[in-house]
Amino acid sequence: MIYWQIFLAFFIPGILGYGGGPASIPLVEHEVVGKYEWMSTQEFSEVVAIGNSLPGPIATKMAGYIGYAEAGVLGSIVAMIATVAPSLILMIGMMVILMKYKEEPEVKSLTKLIRPVIAVLLGFMTIRFAQQSVEGVGISYTLLIMGVSFILLEKVKLHPAFVIALALLFGAITGL
Image (tube, rainbow, N blue to C red; front, top):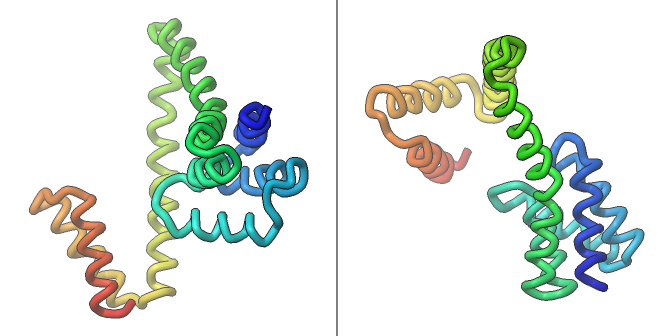
């Protein structure tokens, strides 16, 4: 019975939490704290804080921890499957539809029109990140990090993970 409760506690927020992990946090809290009373609000907020401090999607980290706390390794696995299942089901469904109709002119037009929209969204995100960086560390450090990153990525062809690691190291050394 506990495994079914764990599954529902994470599957339902996965369906209703439009916007990803951060949007589903209040829904998970409702299930974990309010409905099943597995944790107090304070304990849940600590799980969220720890989850935010680690890399990766917050929803799966919370699911793994809470599932493990309630039912061990199997509970953790059930919770993580329940968290990703709604997205996985929708992605497979969309892929089946797209593959079935991929030669249709409407689908070809759709995929061509999505690319510029994604480019604009990424551009706006880049501008917002740059503005936040200027507010956080100043214009000179922002331009320095952007310039060095560009050179390392485009000229030296260094893997992005190494560029990120170098930026983290630079921040640790300079105390930014």
